Length: 202
Length: 204
Image 1 (cartoon, rainbow over the protein chains, first blue to last red):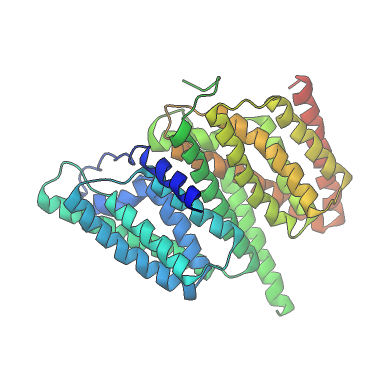
Image 2: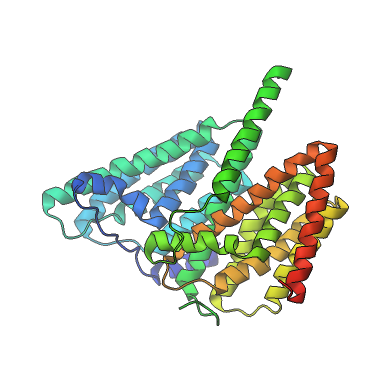
C-alpha cells in the first residue's frame, strides 16, 4: 500500500500542471470562472466521475462527499489564490480514475471514502483554478464563479445520477463511470510516457 | 409492476436507446482534424467511427451482449473500455504488440461467428474473448494518437465513440426479443464475420 502511494505521489509530481485556457471575451470574469470547470478537461472529467459516484450512493455516502467537496473547493480556491501555485494534472487524473472505477464496479462506498475523495477532489480543483492576468477584483470574481460553477456541475450530475433509479439506468451510470475511468487511464499513460510509438500522427 | 406500466417503461427504454443511437449516427459539426479540446475530442470520437474494422467489431460486441442477455449486455460494455484503455496505454508507451491489425480483423470474424451461431458461452469466457480483442483495438487507438490534439479530449472522444458503437449494437440486438429479429441479428453476425474475413485477407 505504501509502495502504491509512493508511486502515485512520484507520478503526480513529475508531470506538468493542467494547462489554462483562453478566456471568453465579453462575458466578464465571473462567468468565465463559472464556465472554467467545463473548459478544463481534467477538471470536468473529475467532476463528472465524482458526481456519478455521489449520485450512485445517495443519501448516506453522498451527503458527506458533497459537503466535503464544496468545503474543500472553496478552501482550495482561497489557498490557490494566496499561494499562486497550481496542481499537477496527474493528481486530478488519478482521482478521476479512482472515482470512475468505483462507479463502474458499483462498490458500496463508505461515507469516509466518499468524504476523502470529495474533499481531495474539491481542494485540488480549487487550487488549480487560478485565473491568469486579471485585476484583483476580476480574480476574485472569477474564483467565485469557479466555486459556484463547480458546485453546480457536481450537484447537477449527482442529482441526475441519483434520480436515475430504474435498473437499466443504473447500468448506464456504471457504463459512464467506466468511460470516465478509461479516459483517465489513457491520459495518465500519455502524461507519464507520451506518444512514442512508431506511426504516431505528426 | 402493473403490466401497462411495465409496457410503458419498456417503450421509454426503447425510445431512449433509439434516440442515443440516432445521435451517435449523426455527423458531428466539427469533422475536421484540429487542435485544442474540440479538435482533440473530434479526432478521438471519429477515430473508431471512421475505421470500418473498428465499427464492425464494436457493433458486434453490442450485438453479442444483447444476444447473451443480462448480465452480459451490461458487463461487456463496462469491461471493454477499461481493457481497451490498457491496450491504449501500451500503444501510447510504444510497447510493441504483434499482429494488431490481424487481431482487429480477427475480432470481427470471431465475434461475428459467435453471433451467427448464437453462441452462449459462460460470461467469463465471453468477457475474456471481448477483453482480449479490446487490447488490440486500444493499442491501435493509442498508437495513432495525433500528438497535436488535446490528449484527454482525444481519449474521452474515442472512449465515447467506441461506447456509442456498442450502444448501436445493443440497440440492434434488442430485436432478438422476436424470432424474426433473432434471425436478422444472426444474419448480421454472419455479415460482420464476412467483413472481418475481407479485412483479414486485405480485400477491404
